[in-house]
Image (cartoon, rainbow over all chains, first blue to last red; front, side, top):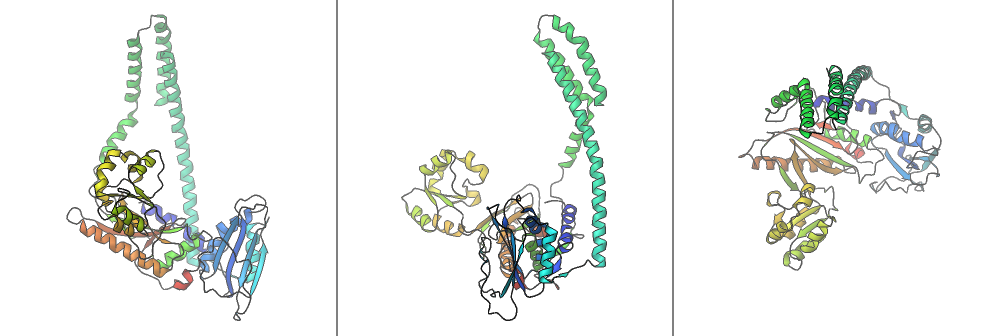
Length: 196
Length: 300
Protein backbone atom coordinates (compact mmCIF):
# COMPACT_ATOMS: atom_id res chain seq x y z
CA UNK A 1 0.00 0.00 0.00
CA UNK A 2 1.09 3.58 -0.54
CA UNK A 3 3.10 5.25 2.19
CA UNK A 4 0.96 6.58 4.98
CA UNK A 5 2.33 10.12 4.70
CA UNK A 6 1.49 10.23 1.03
CA UNK A 7 -1.99 8.96 1.73
CA UNK A 8 -2.60 11.45 4.47
CA UNK A 9 -1.39 14.26 2.26
CA UNK A 10 -3.85 13.13 -0.36
CA UNK A 11 -6.56 13.28 2.25
CA UNK A 12 -6.00 17.01 2.47
CA UNK A 13 -8.43 17.04 -0.42
CA UNK A 14 -11.04 16.66 2.28
CA UNK A 15 -10.46 20.22 3.32
CA UNK A 16 -11.07 21.22 -0.26
CA UNK A 17 -14.39 19.41 -0.22
CA UNK A 18 -15.49 21.04 3.01
CA UNK A 19 -14.57 24.61 2.17
CA UNK A 20 -14.54 26.89 -0.82
CA UNK A 21 -17.06 27.87 -3.47
CA UNK A 22 -20.08 25.63 -3.21
CA UNK A 23 -19.74 24.97 0.51
CA UNK A 24 -23.22 25.96 1.55
CA UNK A 25 -26.08 24.59 3.55
CA UNK A 26 -29.37 24.39 1.71
CA UNK A 27 -32.63 25.09 3.56
CA UNK A 28 -34.69 22.00 4.46
CA UNK A 29 -37.32 22.58 1.79
CA UNK A 30 -34.83 21.78 -1.01
CA UNK A 31 -35.18 18.08 -1.71
CA UNK A 32 -33.38 17.40 -4.92
CA UNK A 33 -31.10 18.99 -7.50
CA UNK A 34 -30.98 17.55 -10.95
CA UNK A 35 -28.52 18.54 -13.67
CA UNK A 36 -29.11 17.87 -17.31
CA UNK A 37 -26.32 18.51 -19.79
CA UNK A 38 -24.25 16.97 -22.55
CA UNK A 39 -21.29 14.62 -22.22
CA UNK A 40 -18.86 16.83 -24.12
CA UNK A 41 -18.02 20.38 -23.25
CA UNK A 42 -18.33 22.17 -26.57
CA UNK A 43 -21.31 24.38 -27.31
CA UNK A 44 -21.60 25.80 -23.82
CA UNK A 45 -21.53 22.67 -21.70
CA UNK A 46 -18.23 23.38 -19.95
CA UNK A 47 -19.72 25.48 -17.16
CA UNK A 48 -22.23 22.79 -16.14
CA UNK A 49 -19.56 20.14 -16.12
CA UNK A 50 -17.22 22.20 -13.98
CA UNK A 51 -20.09 22.98 -11.67
CA UNK A 52 -20.63 19.25 -11.25
CA UNK A 53 -16.97 18.38 -10.81
CA UNK A 54 -15.91 21.20 -8.52
CA UNK A 55 -18.90 22.61 -6.72
CA UNK A 56 -21.42 19.80 -6.46
CA UNK A 57 -19.24 17.60 -4.19
CA UNK A 58 -19.06 20.46 -1.68
CA UNK A 59 -22.81 20.94 -1.80
CA UNK A 60 -23.30 17.22 -1.37
CA UNK A 61 -20.95 17.06 1.58
CA UNK A 62 -22.87 19.72 3.48
CA UNK A 63 -26.28 18.44 2.39
CA UNK A 64 -26.12 14.65 2.44
CA UNK A 65 -29.91 14.39 2.61
CA UNK A 66 -30.45 16.30 -0.65
CA UNK A 67 -30.55 14.01 -3.64
CA UNK A 68 -28.25 15.22 -6.43
CA UNK A 69 -28.53 13.52 -9.76
CA UNK A 70 -27.04 14.05 -13.14
CA UNK A 71 -28.12 13.07 -16.59
CA UNK A 72 -25.63 13.55 -19.37
CA UNK A 73 -26.98 13.28 -22.89
CA UNK A 74 -25.23 12.81 -26.19
CA UNK A 75 -27.19 15.65 -27.71
CA UNK A 76 -24.52 18.33 -27.77
CA UNK A 77 -26.79 21.04 -29.12
CA UNK A 78 -29.43 20.38 -26.48
CA UNK A 79 -30.07 22.54 -23.46
CA UNK A 80 -28.23 22.44 -20.15
CA UNK A 81 -30.54 22.95 -17.24
CA UNK A 82 -30.51 22.62 -13.49
CA UNK A 83 -33.78 21.72 -11.83
CA UNK A 84 -34.27 22.33 -8.14
CA UNK A 85 -37.11 20.52 -6.43
CA UNK A 86 -38.79 22.04 -3.40
CA UNK A 87 -41.16 20.31 -1.01
CA UNK A 88 -42.82 22.37 1.68
CA UNK A 89 -44.87 21.11 4.57
CA UNK A 90 -47.95 20.81 2.34
CA UNK A 91 -47.26 17.66 0.30
CA UNK A 92 -50.06 17.64 -2.26
CA UNK A 93 -48.19 18.95 -5.28
CA UNK A 94 -47.98 17.12 -8.59
CA UNK A 95 -44.85 15.05 -9.24
CA UNK A 96 -42.25 16.77 -11.39
CA UNK A 97 -42.07 16.10 -15.07
CA UNK A 98 -38.33 16.38 -15.43
CA UNK A 99 -37.62 13.51 -13.03
CA UNK A 100 -36.76 10.99 -15.72
CA UNK A 101 -33.05 10.30 -15.62
CA UNK A 102 -30.74 7.45 -16.43
CA UNK A 103 -28.74 7.83 -13.26
CA UNK A 104 -31.52 7.77 -10.73
CA UNK A 105 -32.32 4.09 -10.64
CA UNK A 106 -31.38 3.98 -6.96
CA UNK A 107 -33.85 6.67 -5.91
CA UNK A 108 -35.91 5.58 -2.92
CA UNK A 109 -39.46 4.78 -3.81
CA UNK A 110 -40.92 6.58 -0.82
CA UNK A 111 -39.69 10.06 -1.70
CA UNK A 112 -41.93 13.02 -1.02
CA UNK A 113 -43.76 14.53 -3.99
CA UNK A 114 -42.47 17.98 -4.87
CA UNK A 115 -44.74 20.96 -4.97
CA UNK A 116 -42.47 23.46 -6.68
CA UNK A 117 -39.57 23.29 -9.11
CA UNK A 118 -37.21 25.98 -10.29
CA UNK A 119 -35.12 25.75 -13.41
CA UNK A 120 -31.78 27.38 -14.06
CA UNK A 121 -30.46 27.63 -17.59
CA UNK A 122 -26.78 26.64 -17.47
CA UNK A 123 -25.75 26.73 -21.09
CA UNK A 124 -22.89 29.11 -21.97
CA UNK A 125 -22.53 30.17 -18.36
CA UNK A 126 -19.62 30.07 -16.00
CA UNK A 127 -19.79 27.65 -13.08
CA UNK A 128 -19.62 30.49 -10.58
CA UNK A 129 -22.63 32.13 -12.23
CA UNK A 130 -24.54 28.87 -11.96
CA UNK A 131 -23.63 28.59 -8.31
CA UNK A 132 -24.67 32.13 -7.45
CA UNK A 133 -27.98 31.54 -9.24
CA UNK A 134 -28.52 28.41 -7.17
CA UNK A 135 -27.67 30.19 -3.93
CA UNK A 136 -30.00 33.04 -4.80
CA UNK A 137 -32.89 30.71 -5.64
CA UNK A 138 -32.58 28.49 -2.59
CA UNK A 139 -31.35 31.10 -0.10
CA UNK A 140 -28.55 28.77 0.91
CA UNK A 141 -26.33 29.66 3.86
CA UNK A 142 -22.66 29.88 2.99
CA UNK A 143 -20.28 27.97 5.24
CA UNK A 144 -17.21 29.86 6.40
CA UNK A 145 -13.98 28.30 7.51
CA UNK A 146 -13.34 28.26 11.24
CA UNK A 147 -10.11 29.65 12.63
CA UNK A 148 -8.67 26.16 12.95
CA UNK A 149 -9.59 25.29 9.38
CA UNK A 150 -8.09 28.53 8.16
CA UNK A 151 -4.86 27.56 9.85
CA UNK A 152 -4.96 24.18 8.14
CA UNK A 153 -5.65 25.77 4.78
CA UNK A 154 -2.64 28.00 5.28
CA UNK A 155 -0.54 24.95 6.06
CA UNK A 156 -1.76 23.23 2.90
CA UNK A 157 -0.82 26.24 0.81
CA UNK A 158 2.58 26.36 2.45
CA UNK A 159 3.10 22.67 1.64
CA UNK A 160 2.05 23.24 -1.93
CA UNK A 161 4.53 26.07 -2.35
CA UNK A 162 7.26 23.93 -0.87
CA UNK A 163 6.46 20.98 -3.11
CA UNK A 164 6.42 23.22 -6.16
CA UNK A 165 9.85 24.50 -5.23
CA UNK A 166 11.29 21.05 -4.78
CA UNK A 167 9.68 19.75 -7.95
CA UNK A 168 11.27 22.62 -9.87
CA UNK A 169 14.62 21.76 -8.34
CA UNK A 170 14.17 18.13 -9.22
CA UNK A 171 13.14 19.04 -12.77
CA UNK A 172 16.45 20.88 -13.30
CA UNK A 173 18.43 17.91 -12.01
CA UNK A 174 16.44 15.49 -14.13
CA UNK A 175 16.94 17.64 -17.22
CA UNK A 176 20.69 17.67 -16.64
CA UNK A 177 20.77 13.93 -16.18
CA UNK A 178 18.76 13.41 -19.33
CA UNK A 179 21.04 15.71 -21.28
CA UNK A 180 24.07 13.77 -20.12
CA UNK A 181 22.46 10.49 -21.04
CA UNK A 182 21.55 11.81 -24.44
CA UNK A 183 25.12 13.00 -25.06
CA UNK A 184 26.46 9.61 -24.00
CA UNK A 185 24.02 7.84 -26.24
CA UNK A 186 24.95 9.99 -29.20
CA UNK A 187 28.66 9.42 -28.56
CA UNK A 188 28.12 5.68 -28.42
CA UNK A 189 26.03 5.71 -31.57
CA UNK A 190 28.71 7.70 -33.36
CA UNK A 191 31.39 5.31 -32.17
CA UNK A 192 29.42 2.31 -33.34
CA UNK A 193 28.67 3.90 -36.68
CA UNK A 194 32.35 4.43 -37.26
CA UNK A 195 33.11 0.87 -36.20
CA UNK A 196 30.89 -0.71 -38.82
CA UNK B 1 31.91 12.53 -15.62
CA UNK B 2 30.07 11.80 -18.82
CA UNK B 3 30.97 15.09 -20.42
CA UNK B 4 34.61 14.23 -19.80
CA UNK B 5 34.27 10.80 -21.24
CA UNK B 6 32.60 11.70 -24.48
CA UNK B 7 35.43 13.66 -26.05
CA UNK B 8 37.83 10.82 -25.22
CA UNK B 9 35.65 8.35 -27.00
CA UNK B 10 35.42 10.62 -29.99
CA UNK B 11 39.15 11.17 -29.98
CA UNK B 12 39.91 7.47 -29.97
CA UNK B 13 37.48 7.01 -32.86
CA UNK B 14 39.11 9.80 -34.77
CA UNK B 15 42.60 8.45 -34.42
CA UNK B 16 41.91 4.75 -34.84
CA UNK B 17 39.00 4.90 -37.24
CA UNK B 18 40.54 5.92 -40.56
CA UNK B 19 43.65 3.77 -40.05
CA UNK B 20 41.56 0.69 -39.41
CA UNK B 21 39.23 1.34 -42.27
CA UNK B 22 42.01 1.26 -44.84
CA UNK B 23 43.05 -2.22 -43.76
CA UNK B 24 41.30 -5.40 -44.89
CA UNK B 25 38.26 -6.10 -42.76
CA UNK B 26 39.11 -8.20 -39.74
CA UNK B 27 36.07 -8.82 -37.63
CA UNK B 28 37.85 -9.76 -34.41
CA UNK B 29 39.74 -6.48 -34.38
CA UNK B 30 36.51 -4.52 -34.51
CA UNK B 31 34.72 -6.57 -31.95
CA UNK B 32 37.70 -6.25 -29.64
CA UNK B 33 37.67 -2.51 -29.96
CA UNK B 34 33.97 -2.36 -29.35
CA UNK B 35 34.26 -4.55 -26.27
CA UNK B 36 36.96 -2.40 -24.86
CA UNK B 37 34.86 0.66 -25.33
CA UNK B 38 31.87 -0.97 -23.66
CA UNK B 39 33.99 -2.13 -20.75
CA UNK B 40 35.44 1.31 -20.38
CA UNK B 41 32.03 2.90 -20.30
CA UNK B 42 30.73 0.60 -17.55
CA UNK B 43 33.91 0.88 -15.54
CA UNK B 44 33.98 4.62 -15.84
CA UNK B 45 30.43 4.97 -14.61
CA UNK B 46 30.35 4.24 -10.90
CA UNK B 47 26.59 4.84 -10.79
CA UNK B 48 25.75 1.26 -11.71
CA UNK B 49 28.00 -0.26 -9.09
CA UNK B 50 26.50 1.89 -6.40
CA UNK B 51 23.01 0.88 -7.38
CA UNK B 52 23.82 -2.81 -7.16
CA UNK B 53 25.11 -2.62 -3.63
CA UNK B 54 22.07 -0.65 -2.57
CA UNK B 55 19.74 -3.24 -4.01
CA UNK B 56 21.43 -6.04 -2.10
CA UNK B 57 20.91 -4.25 1.17
CA UNK B 58 17.24 -3.70 0.43
CA UNK B 59 16.38 -7.34 -0.19
CA UNK B 60 17.19 -8.33 3.37
CA UNK B 61 13.79 -7.19 4.62
CA UNK B 62 11.50 -10.17 5.01
CA UNK B 63 8.25 -8.48 5.93
CA UNK B 64 6.41 -5.46 4.56
CA UNK B 65 7.09 -2.10 6.13
CA UNK B 66 4.44 -1.18 8.66
CA UNK B 67 3.94 2.51 9.06
CA UNK B 68 2.77 3.88 12.33
CA UNK B 69 -0.90 4.71 12.34
CA UNK B 70 -0.36 7.16 15.18
CA UNK B 71 -0.45 10.22 12.95
CA UNK B 72 -3.01 8.84 10.55
CA UNK B 73 -6.40 10.46 10.45
CA UNK B 74 -9.05 7.81 10.99
CA UNK B 75 -12.77 7.99 10.38
CA UNK B 76 -15.94 6.32 11.51
CA UNK B 77 -17.87 4.46 8.82
CA UNK B 78 -20.60 7.09 8.49
CA UNK B 79 -18.12 9.95 8.18
CA UNK B 80 -16.12 8.10 5.56
CA UNK B 81 -19.31 7.34 3.66
CA UNK B 82 -20.35 10.97 3.80
CA UNK B 83 -17.09 12.02 2.20
CA UNK B 84 -17.19 9.24 -0.37
CA UNK B 85 -20.76 10.16 -1.28
CA UNK B 86 -19.62 13.73 -1.89
CA UNK B 87 -16.71 12.61 -4.07
CA UNK B 88 -19.00 10.31 -6.05
CA UNK B 89 -21.79 12.82 -6.58
CA UNK B 90 -23.52 12.41 -9.92
CA UNK B 91 -21.85 9.10 -10.77
CA UNK B 92 -24.04 6.24 -11.88
CA UNK B 93 -24.79 4.32 -8.67
CA UNK B 94 -24.39 0.91 -10.25
CA UNK B 95 -20.93 1.47 -11.69
CA UNK B 96 -19.24 3.17 -8.75
CA UNK B 97 -18.33 0.81 -5.92
CA UNK B 98 -17.11 0.92 -2.38
CA UNK B 99 -13.78 -0.82 -2.00
CA UNK B 100 -12.16 -2.25 1.07
CA UNK B 101 -8.42 -2.58 1.59
CA UNK B 102 -7.17 -4.71 4.45
CA UNK B 103 -3.54 -4.27 5.28
CA UNK B 104 -1.93 -7.23 6.99
CA UNK B 105 1.12 -7.67 9.13
CA UNK B 106 2.78 -10.52 7.33
CA UNK B 107 5.94 -11.90 5.83
CA UNK B 108 6.78 -11.06 2.25
CA UNK B 109 7.08 -14.69 1.24
CA UNK B 110 5.05 -17.64 2.36
CA UNK B 111 1.45 -18.61 1.73
CA UNK B 112 -1.07 -15.89 0.90
CA UNK B 113 -4.72 -15.63 1.68
CA UNK B 114 -6.92 -16.49 -1.23
CA UNK B 115 -10.55 -17.26 -0.84
CA UNK B 116 -14.07 -16.32 -1.82
CA UNK B 117 -17.19 -15.47 0.06
CA UNK B 118 -20.78 -14.50 -0.36
CA UNK B 119 -21.53 -11.11 1.12
CA UNK B 120 -24.88 -10.55 2.85
CA UNK B 121 -25.56 -7.90 0.19
CA UNK B 122 -23.87 -8.99 -3.02
CA UNK B 123 -21.96 -6.37 -5.00
CA UNK B 124 -21.89 -7.94 -8.39
CA UNK B 125 -24.60 -10.33 -9.38
CA UNK B 126 -23.98 -10.74 -13.08
CA UNK B 127 -20.72 -12.72 -13.27
CA UNK B 128 -20.49 -15.29 -16.02
CA UNK B 129 -19.33 -18.71 -14.91
CA UNK B 130 -17.81 -21.37 -17.12
CA UNK B 131 -17.82 -25.00 -16.02
CA UNK B 132 -15.55 -27.59 -17.59
CA UNK B 133 -17.16 -31.02 -17.38
CA UNK B 134 -18.64 -33.52 -19.85
CA UNK B 135 -21.57 -31.66 -21.46
CA UNK B 136 -24.13 -34.44 -20.99
CA UNK B 137 -23.29 -35.46 -17.45
CA UNK B 138 -25.26 -34.92 -14.26
CA UNK B 139 -22.78 -32.32 -13.10
CA UNK B 140 -23.35 -30.28 -16.25
CA UNK B 141 -27.07 -30.29 -15.62
CA UNK B 142 -26.62 -29.12 -12.05
CA UNK B 143 -24.21 -26.38 -13.09
CA UNK B 144 -26.61 -25.10 -15.72
CA UNK B 145 -29.45 -25.16 -13.27
CA UNK B 146 -27.57 -22.96 -10.83
CA UNK B 147 -26.64 -20.36 -13.41
CA UNK B 148 -23.46 -21.38 -15.24
CA UNK B 149 -23.22 -19.71 -18.65
CA UNK B 150 -20.88 -22.11 -20.42
CA UNK B 151 -20.74 -25.85 -19.84
CA UNK B 152 -18.64 -28.27 -21.84
CA UNK B 153 -15.16 -29.53 -22.61
CA UNK B 154 -13.71 -29.43 -26.13
CA UNK B 155 -15.98 -26.65 -27.32
CA UNK B 156 -14.74 -24.39 -24.53
CA UNK B 157 -11.09 -25.33 -25.09
CA UNK B 158 -11.37 -24.39 -28.73
CA UNK B 159 -13.14 -21.14 -28.00
CA UNK B 160 -10.51 -20.16 -25.47
CA UNK B 161 -7.71 -21.02 -27.86
CA UNK B 162 -9.37 -18.84 -30.48
CA UNK B 163 -9.33 -15.98 -27.95
CA UNK B 164 -13.02 -15.97 -27.09
CA UNK B 165 -13.08 -15.87 -23.31
CA UNK B 166 -16.68 -15.06 -22.56
CA UNK B 167 -16.67 -15.71 -18.83
CA UNK B 168 -15.34 -14.20 -15.61
CA UNK B 169 -14.90 -17.36 -13.54
CA UNK B 170 -13.89 -20.85 -14.52
CA UNK B 171 -14.60 -24.10 -12.68
CA UNK B 172 -13.50 -27.61 -13.49
CA UNK B 173 -14.89 -30.96 -12.49
CA UNK B 174 -12.36 -33.34 -10.95
CA UNK B 175 -12.83 -35.92 -13.71
CA UNK B 176 -12.19 -33.37 -16.46
CA UNK B 177 -8.96 -32.06 -14.98
CA UNK B 178 -6.77 -34.40 -17.01
CA UNK B 179 -8.39 -33.23 -20.24
CA UNK B 180 -8.00 -29.62 -19.22
CA UNK B 181 -4.32 -30.05 -18.48
CA UNK B 182 -3.86 -31.83 -21.78
CA UNK B 183 -5.45 -28.92 -23.65
CA UNK B 184 -2.67 -26.66 -22.29
CA UNK B 185 -4.78 -23.60 -21.64
CA UNK B 186 -2.60 -22.45 -18.78
CA UNK B 187 -0.84 -19.94 -20.96
CA UNK B 188 -4.13 -18.30 -21.95
CA UNK B 189 -6.10 -18.60 -18.73
CA UNK B 190 -3.27 -18.42 -16.23
CA UNK B 191 -2.40 -14.73 -16.53
CA UNK B 192 -6.09 -13.85 -16.27
CA UNK B 193 -6.42 -15.86 -13.09
CA UNK B 194 -9.02 -18.10 -14.69
CA UNK B 195 -7.12 -21.39 -14.77
CA UNK B 196 -8.86 -23.87 -12.49
CA UNK B 197 -6.65 -25.42 -9.87
CA UNK B 198 -7.19 -27.32 -6.66
CA UNK B 199 -5.24 -24.69 -4.76
CA UNK B 200 -7.78 -21.99 -5.48
CA UNK B 201 -10.69 -24.29 -4.90
CA UNK B 202 -11.86 -24.21 -8.49
CA UNK B 203 -11.43 -27.92 -9.15
CA UNK B 204 -14.39 -29.48 -7.43
CA UNK B 205 -16.55 -32.55 -7.33
CA UNK B 206 -19.89 -30.93 -6.64
CA UNK B 207 -19.95 -28.39 -9.46
CA UNK B 208 -23.55 -27.35 -8.90
CA UNK B 209 -23.04 -26.31 -5.30
CA UNK B 210 -19.93 -24.31 -6.14
CA UNK B 211 -21.69 -22.48 -8.95
CA UNK B 212 -24.51 -21.66 -6.58
CA UNK B 213 -21.98 -20.27 -4.11
CA UNK B 214 -20.22 -18.28 -6.79
CA UNK B 215 -23.25 -16.50 -8.20
CA UNK B 216 -23.34 -13.30 -6.21
CA UNK B 217 -20.11 -14.24 -4.50
CA UNK B 218 -16.84 -12.35 -4.62
CA UNK B 219 -13.23 -13.40 -4.57
CA UNK B 220 -10.31 -11.88 -2.81
CA UNK B 221 -6.61 -12.51 -2.50
CA UNK B 222 -3.68 -11.00 -0.73
CA UNK B 223 -1.24 -9.08 -2.90
CA UNK B 224 1.81 -7.40 -1.38
CA UNK B 225 0.32 -7.68 2.06
CA UNK B 226 -3.00 -6.10 1.15
CA UNK B 227 -6.37 -7.69 0.49
CA UNK B 228 -8.61 -5.62 -1.75
CA UNK B 229 -12.21 -6.28 -2.58
CA UNK B 230 -15.34 -4.43 -3.64
CA UNK B 231 -17.68 -4.48 -0.66
CA UNK B 232 -20.65 -2.47 -1.78
CA UNK B 233 -22.52 -0.58 -4.43
CA UNK B 234 -22.76 3.16 -4.07
CA UNK B 235 -26.44 2.94 -3.30
CA UNK B 236 -26.00 0.84 -0.16
CA UNK B 237 -27.06 2.24 3.19
CA UNK B 238 -24.55 2.46 6.06
CA UNK B 239 -26.25 -0.48 7.77
CA UNK B 240 -25.86 -2.66 4.70
CA UNK B 241 -22.24 -1.61 4.39
CA UNK B 242 -21.64 -2.39 8.04
CA UNK B 243 -23.02 -5.89 7.59
CA UNK B 244 -20.90 -6.49 4.51
CA UNK B 245 -17.71 -5.15 6.05
CA UNK B 246 -18.18 -7.09 9.25
CA UNK B 247 -18.82 -10.29 7.35
CA UNK B 248 -15.82 -9.73 5.11
CA UNK B 249 -13.43 -9.02 7.97
CA UNK B 250 -14.68 -12.00 9.96
CA UNK B 251 -14.13 -14.17 6.92
CA UNK B 252 -10.58 -12.92 6.48
CA UNK B 253 -9.84 -13.45 10.15
CA UNK B 254 -11.08 -17.00 9.86
CA UNK B 255 -8.76 -17.53 6.90
CA UNK B 256 -5.88 -16.15 8.89
CA UNK B 257 -6.51 -18.41 11.84
CA UNK B 258 -6.79 -21.40 9.50
CA UNK B 259 -3.29 -20.58 8.30
CA UNK B 260 -1.88 -19.96 11.75
CA UNK B 261 0.09 -23.21 11.82
CA UNK B 262 2.01 -22.17 8.70
CA UNK B 263 2.31 -18.42 8.98
CA UNK B 264 1.31 -15.67 11.35
CA UNK B 265 -0.81 -12.91 9.87
CA UNK B 266 -2.44 -10.04 11.62
CA UNK B 267 -4.91 -7.40 10.50
CA UNK B 268 -3.25 -4.02 10.71
CA UNK B 269 -5.38 -1.42 8.98
CA UNK B 270 -8.81 -1.18 7.37
CA UNK B 271 -9.26 1.34 4.58
CA UNK B 272 -12.49 2.21 2.80
CA UNK B 273 -12.35 3.88 -0.57
CA UNK B 274 -14.38 3.96 -3.75
CA UNK B 275 -13.98 4.27 -7.48
CA UNK B 276 -13.43 8.04 -7.42
CA UNK B 277 -12.66 8.83 -3.80
CA UNK B 278 -9.46 8.71 -1.74
CA UNK B 279 -8.94 6.02 0.87
CA UNK B 280 -10.28 6.54 4.39
CA UNK B 281 -8.67 4.67 7.21
CA UNK B 282 -11.47 3.40 9.44
CA UNK B 283 -11.29 3.53 13.22
CA UNK B 284 -13.86 0.80 13.80
CA UNK B 285 -16.74 3.00 14.96
CA UNK B 286 -20.02 3.03 13.11
CA UNK B 287 -20.70 6.73 13.55
CA UNK B 288 -19.20 9.70 15.33
CA UNK B 289 -20.87 12.48 17.28
CA UNK B 290 -21.46 14.79 14.34
CA UNK B 291 -22.08 12.39 11.49
CA UNK B 292 -25.44 12.73 9.71
CA UNK B 293 -28.25 10.27 10.19
CA UNK B 294 -27.94 6.98 8.36
CA UNK B 295 -31.12 7.70 6.42
CA UNK B 296 -29.60 10.84 5.00
CA UNK B 297 -26.51 8.94 3.93
CA UNK B 298 -28.45 6.54 1.74
CA UNK B 299 -29.77 9.38 -0.44
CA UNK B 300 -27.97 9.46 -3.75
